Image 1 (tube, rainbow, N blue to C red):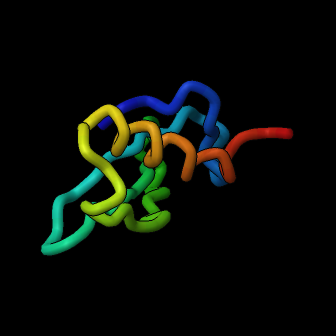
Image 2: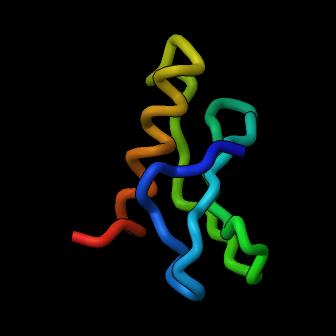
Length: 71
């Protein structure tokens, strides 16, 4: 799990962590609260054909968390 630099939990305002889980042809991207308040959400998928390196997958997963930032 990686801490998002600016995303905050919509339930308790604590920082969010994001992670990925490999599936058959894509990566599932999910977010959860660092305070373990119970917030956990799958925010989308990244097709394996869209990324060549882990860095690209992490960047796309981080971008998906922008919905939890202010502004």
